[in-house]
Image (cartoon, rainbow, N blue to C red; front, top):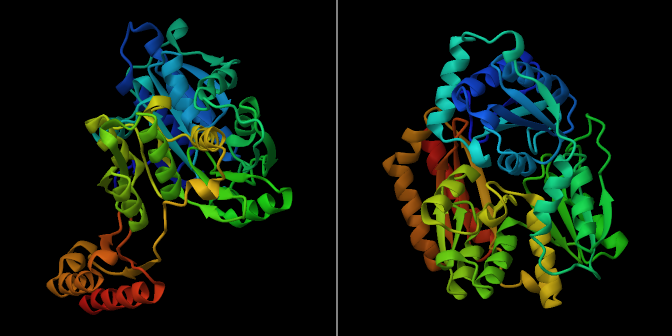
Length: 445
């Protein structure tokens, strides 16, 4: 059996891989690992979820696990993942649990655990929880020592007060279409943007438990593109199911991805003296165009492995103030311990209002180079990726590209697949080189 925790919590097909029994065991194990007797409010866990139907079942199971170990469950209801992280800190709780599968389709679900202060758990803490899941329940309390369930009536209000600080400039005069993906942003995002002064057109903001991410949100940008043009909006913002991501669309209907958003925010923070060590943290998947734009601006870029947890680790280690991923997961430690799509949207619009500039103008420094990605199925991804013939093919392609592009050969983190990614000044060159390297990988198989 593989490791229970992936790069973003425990995730799987709800009621098949991610069962109520597993959710109860995770709640119980997290309680035993993350709280200690006699620590007052630390014997409280914040519990939130996105609107998917299975979240109701899994929430009940997690809460049963928590309370069976004498931990009170502070239930915040349907809220974004970053809201649960923030509220874990704001309420002084021992830890937090978010039930969501983010951008995954509705049948999936997941359980993500935040430690004290709303911080993501490290591998050691996750491994210890996994061990406790396997050992079964311990010596459980009885009578008055059993945990209770408390509904946090002010959870949304607290979160909205928190994110309001992300927009130092009022947004009057800006018209935004926000695609809420029928997810956790459906109530919070329109309220936050209107409170900051923007005129908001909310779409896909009617969750029924079954329609989350269904042809909408940050994985289906064409819906938002059409709506921005239809409403004559200044921009559009797209969130995923748990609202920790944000992608954008400019007034002309063009998609603005996470790389372009990071360039915009890095330049804004540099100008404001807020970009620590004049450095941006991102993953190896960010487009070469981001690196070129940052180099031209005198901003250093530090790259990590794919996954927001690696971005967060690098940011904490270096005390950096901006990081993120091409997918729109942007981390601003001044406003939270994890990516927050609503904060990202507010910061982006605040920059537009502050400079009286269009989104198209503000992201102009970012020129996305054509990118071709080919996945090759293999039997031993590590051995194939390190094979001399494959390394030679990569070296030849790199020599041909020079400074005008780059090649990335990467074994998948979850499948027996080697990913070949090439960026070049034109798509034909990128495709030819990607095919050549992919063929060397296939030949090695």
